[in-house]
Image (cartoon, rainbow, N blue to C red; front, side, top):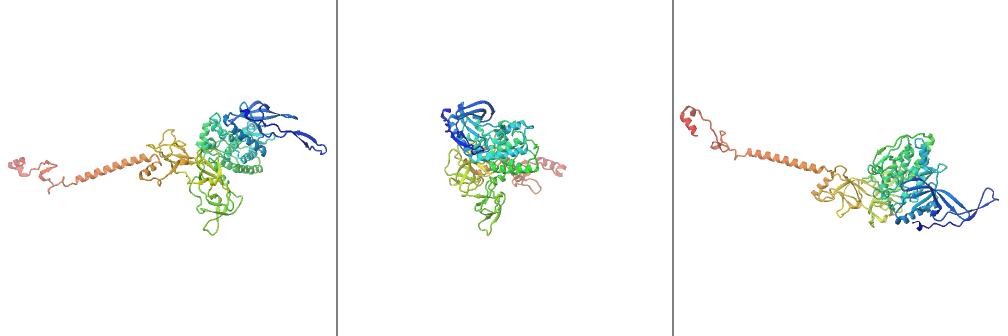
Length: 633
């Protein structure tokens, strides 16, 4: 593998005159420019000892030897030696790494560690970086209590947010933010020690299959990082989660989810949707922005520009009120679920005069917040910088503009707005063709989350078309022509696909469906994922007959069927008893079986078909003839 990499030759040295105080005494210095390529001869690197281990490789202390005709130098460097990856994917990864190296060198980012170059040592890809004094994690380990004071946390947070924002401007996500990756120089300035290695590894399958499932360090990973193609996509807001975890670690000295296994962390963050609770004593603005970092739906999280502004304003407030000596508090868990929009969601698209708008619908719902403005155009802004202010909207058929809160309306461009469901005009078999629109620019460029893609799809509005959306609470069922669904799906009695209710919609359109009509026992699952392109909506209106409508009624709860059976049995018994009483009453009143004479005796002296005994009269008792006559009877 190393033989396929060409080491860049050193450029020809050049002379220049260095001004050193006295313009009459200039001295000539010979120097060599930076090599034009990123690759370093592995023979020039001497590994000394390992100084750290991580999920993506080991970090070594090393010496990089550089020499030319007029100089010979040794530089102390840190070598990040990555774990092996499949040989057929090495070139693709090195191509991404080289592009990143070129961008870092050309833009000279201030908040990111200095990257010397790339090499191959012992068949492993190695990244040579500047050697720093240590990390914030090392500094915390030396402090009593293992935590930092708030002013230091805010200062570090501001510098880190700037570095992350610079990488985001290059379309690079870090995805591995943590205290041990925040490097410190001799002036106590902080630098990002990881410039997006997990992001560069997207699509690369390492030999270790377990490592392929994690795009970061588990304790700091956002929910969508665990399964980006299913619960994603991963975006700039994904780094907000890792940033929030790192800040909490600095404040408390406790690593998020400390002591839990990887599976337990997955269950807490992804399945149970838990998030760390903040320590007490924080400024309100800091607490709000950190809480926003832990929103389960990434669209509700703040961007780095929002975090940076909040930290800078809070830093001034802290120093004006005096230094905060102790934060206190412990790390606990708070179970919450996102409902509606956050301030951070609304701040990502500021309205301008001339924008076409419509009433904003609740997140994953078909209900509008403000029915007074169905559609219109912005004709005035009360405050250009107010993210939660008011605008003047001209609505058709109204004589004067309406004053409307910006949180109740949304911009529409090319007939599309953020949150709309769209379908690709040209379907792609590698991922779902039905997804959720994340943004639409005023020039028509759009970004969409699709199930099966780890990152946002970008294109033009002409490449997608708006479709009927899915909402929370809707019942869905697999299409009849789907024989092998993308995800497991339960079946009804008799072999048909069961119907379930949508309980959650992920930012890429993936559906989380519950089946209240199924009675399950023990650990049997009753919640399943679904590809929106493989299901259809089910309602009483779509059911053609009475039988189908009743079957859909059973989908609402598993108890409906046994209750229906019990009610039917009760009705049958009740009807049987009622019919029996009617028949008995009719038999008693039937004249054919109960014909009587005037003195109450039945005709022929019989009762019920048998001979009846007649009471003898007085004459029969006194006279013998009467007795014989009576006996003869």
